[in-house]
Length: 277
Length: 125
Image 1 (cartoon, rainbow over the protein chains, first blue to last red):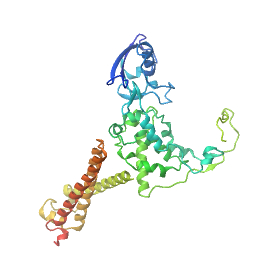
Image 2: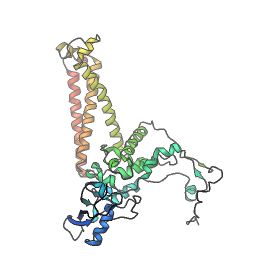
Image 3: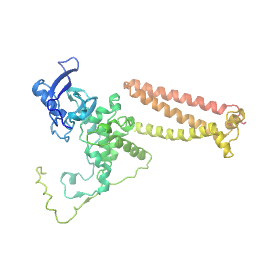
């Protein structure tokens, strides 16, 4: 199907500037639709033509950085990853992600999400700190072990899942799908030994216990991650631990990388830019 | 730690309800089917049947267990609904203590009713 080159679309944009506006309000802007135009392209066009003070976050333009999460026609999406033509309408309603305070216009305050994320220690926890700081060998992991957490590692922390979650909307104590999904990602990583540290937080009121399994987080994830599944797996693991039925494992050992001729098409790793004193 | 333990008990109570409610439904509502297999031929709601069950230690235990499981399961769910209304710290404590006391009182009353029923196993016939 070819697009009408002169087709116009209307952007309804929710504007709000704390300290200046008493409450958020909607503004409408009409722009010409260019084939292949994303919502992010449209916002740039609106900013260029009629709303120079319009604010939002964006960076990579290719669904990698997770900056441009916003509510587009009622659904949390990445603006850079959403073609206007796929919305199937000439009206594009853009608002900041719900369940977050607004910094300005389409810029949500994601700090609570990242603070909770940090509390759940989203990194490998091991005893061999020296090896982590200055790696000499490799941590052993089989392709099968990688499969356990691989899909959860695709998370880009855009906050779309948090915006879609009905429990986050009503319960400020609940950690939410992104931090919980990432805690599960590290708990299931065979190289990690931090389950006991993370469970101190996960066993409490902010843990997975308030999840109703609405599944909205998984529905809206622009990267195809399934945080709802991660949360259910986490519940199972936590309950198994309580009942002393969880199989304990040691973090993967440090091993010599496999020897063999290097394939020519694989470039060598760049020189380290940070060195230990 | 507390939330994990409460949730685990909630799931455990759900499993107990599943089994005991299944038993209840089978005995009370599938007597025709049971009769077909040569068991439970009498009408389960007749006085003799009710009294016979009340006089059985097994049934008395299942009544008390089902009561406890159902009360815990229901009150935990109700507590979660109330907690999602985002009450303050004091109100949370009031909810926790209040629901625990009401649940415990209902359990004691229900247990007394099961044990004190005419012909109950604990009444010596």
